[in-house]
Image (tube, rainbow, N blue to C red; front, side):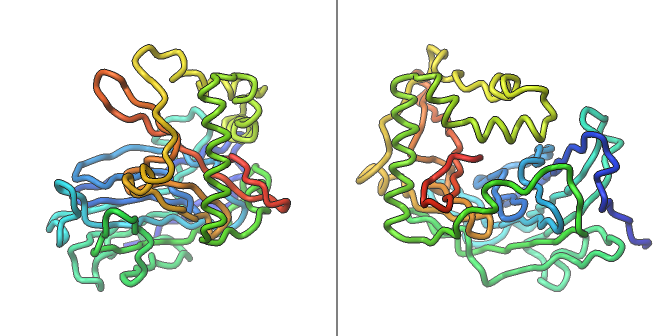
Length: 311
């Protein structure tokens, strides 16, 4: 079989738009680009969907990875891999608003967790001058206080050097974050400041706290002004809903109940407080259904030691 030629210099596109097509069945999985999580599934299911990831692309070599783990059945992960378990991810680029059939492949990984390690990733596409995926059976990055996943495999693959139209991201210049109690406490206070904004429904303060997020969305989606980014972010959605209400701030004993921990990613440059289902200290619930609406926060720590909500 001939190797596929992957795109490298994506600056040929006027408005390059980066996505990852994910597909999985019979396994839990967290999908990451440059060690930044962008999709999580920890229950049994079957999904085939495309996720925008331009805000996670960096200049040069990018790394696509999947943390595969046995899915939860009841309250605990199952003990062994489902025999038909499969997980796959493909990084693409295309012109913004172009159809799917104009996508160009950047890299691809495919894993059958129940297979022998020698052939578990054999169906990953062969790409000209790009190394094959790396499998890691020993590292266990997916671990949380209230649940333990005994079966884990990390599959990763690096692209060719890619030239994007985006600048070096602000979080890349931040401090390396260490897993300490002090960092947990100070990050929790950053969450608390965001929580107070939601309590007061202070739109001006919310726009200020999310400005860097909006600036990034303006860049990667090629909006003409930041107001369009704010509109797409739909910051007031939960405030305007009669069905949703802000849950109590999750800390102390409640944090232990939910199994929250300091989770560091992006090779040590980003952090969040979360649990195995994606719950963070700020949570909305649907009153009648008692369903949770999980707000996603990612922070970096600047050179002054301040936590900045960035993603």
